[in-house]
Every structure is written in structure tokens, then in C-alpha cells.
Image 1 (cartoon, one colour):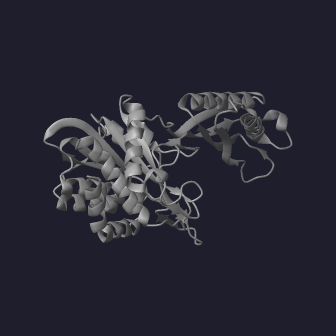
Image 2 (cartoon, helix red, strand yellow):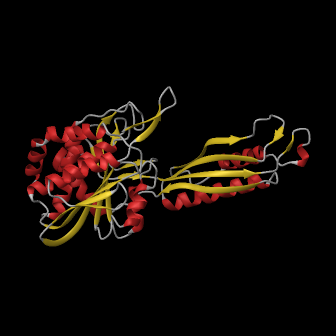
Image 3 (cartoon, one colour):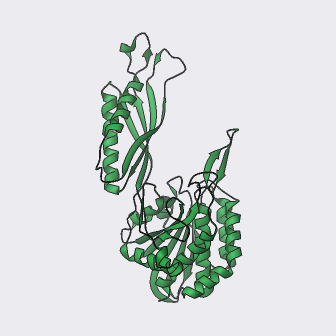
Length: 379
């Protein structure tokens, strides 16, 4: 089985690389991946693999076995990132490797179908929109894309500083991530009569001081930092009655994230109240921390070793970065999950518009993912 998969992936090398180049050439923002979805669906339809739409751009594809067995899924994100050029115009780039993930998941499913390796149960590929907007997985979950799955595997290419080409980990422990917007409301007044007003900037300053002063367990990874602030008006002699600022919060675990959010809310409420203002804290987006399953990690680890050798399997990686893949687990606590951290020599780093990686990683990832599913559906 191992040799079959490796040989077949190598036989399709040029097609796999061409698929990646095609997807890289049509970057699209989250919830707008119309060309990307159409391209992938066309390739699946040509292989006789049925697809099912769950959102406007998100869909699944399944290869079903002839016997009862586990229902195992692969998830790929599809969206690109927005950037601004010198003229201030927005353009999109696949600077986080989602085109690579879609390529690997697509071809893993195509290889399984071609070789007839889904003997029992089913293999389901989930092509998900809007990971960068932190809403795609939740929408797919709510629409039922992960329903009845027993196992689900994710994949992400990694920066060269973290994992090198020829290496991979079977667990990428993402942290929880939350973005909040805070509105401090005071009372406008003339600068010559400040006692008649409530300066919202003063309230915001105290709130931010409180955020920067909060503490959680220093043995765990966490952070809370203000990333944007807007306040004041056109005239310099008006006491402003409104300030808004955004907060980026990260935590190693979901309970720790809940603690950080509650402390940030208290800091904002208390800071505003100290000057007689009020604070409204609105959560703009949130994704949970990773919670994986030992059995799924073990299966993925064996697939990595089969492809890269024992020396290619590295220890699990803990990252303050986040991924909405974990919404599937939160929706179904019985779901067994693992996440492939794939060495690809990404340079200079993820979310850089000049990001590049070694395309050999596409072949390696396709082999690992196909083998991980074949081990569960063909034995």
C-alpha cells in the first residue's frame, strides 16, 4: 500500500504541481472563493467523485467503500490574504499556503480513488472557505459538513524556522485566538470646560493600562495586546466622547482564553468607570485552541514515518498561531483529530506577500495524507 501510494503520487507529479500553480494564480478572499471552488469541483467531477455544497463556496467530496467502517475526513482551507499596493489598492495573495493545502487534499482523495484504497467506511474531503476570516469552519460545521465523521485530519505548511523540508509533526497545537472591539463612551465638551465632559481618551488609556497590567499563569502561553485605536475629532479643542480600539488575545488553552477575555472585559469596564465613562466589549471573532486525539496522532505519525522515515517525524509543535479547523472538534467532542505540520521551507514567513516554499512538500504531504487515510480505510 505504501509503495502503491508513493509510486502513484510520483506518477502524477507534474499534474500535482500544475494544480498548485493553477490555484496559486486565482487567489480569492474568504467567502469569495468561486473560481477556486469551481476549479477543484471540475477536477473531482472528472474523476467521478461526487461533491456536495454546504456554503456558497464551501463543499465536500466523498469516496465511499463497500463495507462498513470508519468515516475519515481531510480538511483543506481555500482562501487567500488581502494586501495593499503602493496605490492603496487591495490585491490578494496565497501567502499562507491554502492553495498548497487544497492541492494536497484534492490529490490525496484522487489517489485513494484511483487505487481503490477506500475498502470500508468513507473518505471525505472538506474544502473550507474563509479560514483567514475566522468564520469558514464554523459555517461549514453549522451546515453539516463534518456530520458523522469519526476522524478528521488537517494540514498546514510551516515556516523554515519551525520545520524544515523532509520533516513533519503529527500535531500542531494551535492556541485559541480572539479579536475584540472596545467602544469607550464619554461626554463631549469644550476643551476650555473639561469638567462638563467625560474624556473617552482618558477612559481608553486607563482601560489599555489595565489590559497591559493583567496577569495569567506565566507557565502557559498567552497574550492580550491593543492593535488599533481611533479617537478624537476634527477640532483639537473638543473633549472626545467616543474612542474605539481593538484587542488581539491568544491563549494556549480554551479555559485560559475564557479567563483572559473575562479579565480584559473587567479592565475595560473598570478603566472607563474610573473617569465616569462606559465600555462596550464586542467579540469580533474567535477560534478555539487545539484538542487532539492520541489515536489519530499515532496514525498520522506512522504515515509520516512511512513517507519520511523515522528521522522525519519530529515532536509536536506548540504555536501561538490559530486555525479554525478546531471548530469541528468543538462541535463534536467525539471526533478524533490530528493536524499535520508539514515542513516546506516556507520563506521568509507565513502571511508575507513574498512567501515561497519548496514545491516538493506538495508531493510529500499528498503521500502522508493519502497513506494516513488508507491505513484506516483499507486494513
